[in-house]
Image (cartoon, rainbow, N blue to C red; front, side):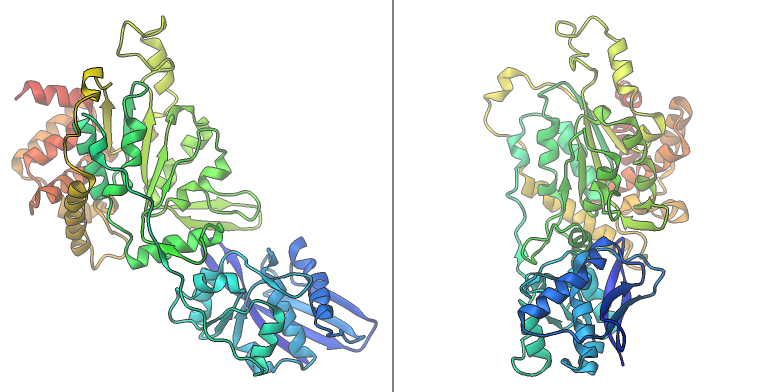
Length: 509
């Protein structure tokens, strides 16, 4: 007799259903696993044997063969232990065959039969819901998997408890979703002295999910401003929270099964490798760009990152997804993030200050920022200079708007965009608009179009730069509550992209 259980194999954020077939046949005693298993899956037979022995269940003196179908799909991870044990117990008629076949299971077995939490419970619950099956997972994963309300999640603490559940000796109650985790304590924009222009740029970036580049001397407040960006962004919508949590589940970052509505804020160190930033390594795990999906990726000391790492950002910024290519698989992860980059103007950091600058001025600035290629720099919607704050201003009382005030305006602008793109699944914010859609929603008035044409001709805007100015102008109009894009909106958008254009606009009045 062949017994069947089901589990999943992960390919990026997608989980594919895997059928675990177990046959117990006459022959020399053996226990073999086939179907392209990796080392961790092959070792499952020893963990299963020991766990059953701890419960005084002896394996028959026959040939046991476990096949993982489809056989050409690579199987990785220790979560295959539990489904293999279930299929084996069904094959030797300890568990009811019908109940096991109606279950998607994942979990690692300890030698004493207890179940160890594994990654990927949330995507597995999505598959179980689609297949209309029950999900069986370790107790530590139950709260996470239960967030998929359409799936029934059973989370025993041990294999013995799972056997008792299926045989009716002690039926377990379905797991309940974990608590919604509070976001990190907010840092208020009011703490930042001065830097009103930089605060305005952050507000625009948060409202339309625009990429922003900040250049300033050391200690001018670039990192301080970036750290306060999550405090002015709206919380994740339920669908966004589920998307983001699925990625964090694969990375093993969900704490106690809780899902957070706070937007991710990732700030990798400039020594991070390419695999750490874009994904890869053993198992092609998600990188920082995917962990920041629907949130913020802050890269401080931007020119200090290795050149190949910086160049790999170009494609994810444009497409909103990253492909981790390997010889045997291509894994896709979503990565619609807002890139916030910070850099010093030069190696010494004091290029604008003749009294403190090094002897290589201005060549040091050209060499340092020259590490950022033109195509990558062209992908930043807003570029701002963050000047140093005067010592006398540091003793002044807190001034300016609080994060709550700015967040209210950002939320209103996001609400307008949500209504605008309600029927468009591939666009959520203005940064996603392109082609005919962008021309439809961001067409400036006559004066604005004339201004943009003059700027594009005089300062050599690329086609990408032209469209990014339109997106930013649309966001500025949303913050103003304007139905159309007018000349002041275009002028402000241009001023945040080209320093030379800002000076020309100021001279023109």
